[in-house]
Image 1 (cartoon, rainbow, N blue to C red):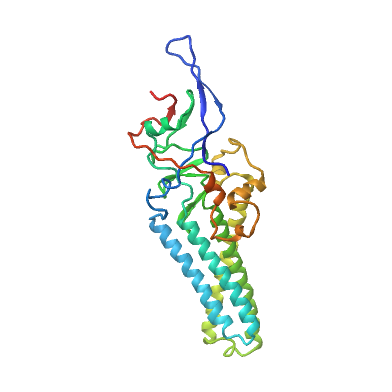
Image 2: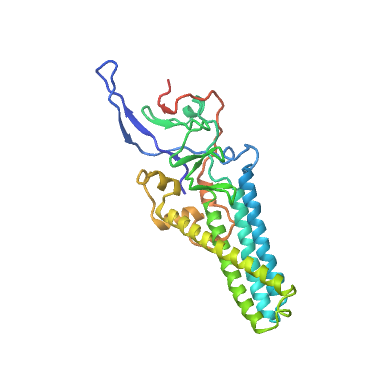
Length: 327
């Protein structure tokens, strides 16, 4: 797994004429700049990442409420009143496992640092510690005063530059970036699966109730049962469509090695793209295994390859385009 890199550019300054300079830019070999995970998080002493955004927090709470509502209807309206014990056990176990994995994936996507660049590291001391070659150029984000790695973009909600930022999702109250894209993909996948499973069970339950007495197919009254099932059907259909589309777009972004924001800004072709399978392995943390489907496994191969360095304190450099050597 490759560590974050800054794509630097050589600037050839013209010579021979006073007051004029012929500037030509060409891409140079990538300069690896290891950045510690300890300084990427919101606190240098805490590994917890959480965005204090009111809209995002409300959307995240609504997501959990809707999942628990589906859990309530599936268990107490459809499964417990069922006379078929095997049907109840199999579907109950499957739905609860998928719901648990969906909630765990949501929590990991929300509380995992998406790849934030250290804030306020655009100092002379820090840049000198990178040991860049004369003629190279680094770029400073004017909003968070950090040295921007290649393919990093600033998020106005997170107030940080995020490496390989795809988009900011209010439903997980976080950016989808280099470090948490796997958990976001798993979240959309498991939500789509439980939505499909709930819709199938609703259809079977309606057929069962039509053939039998409505008062015997549910512990609730017939009107309440119908309302609860219709609401679940609407929720399941809406979430199935939405999360299936999101799952497809995320897998497509991974396979093409192109984030959503890069596609919108037309930044394609400015870096060496990885093959589809190699990009999938990088996003999910290693070769194909069951750990790809687990929200409890970390991206160990990415962690092992990243160095640890301290952001040196000093005065922030005013220029947004910083040439080496520093004046």
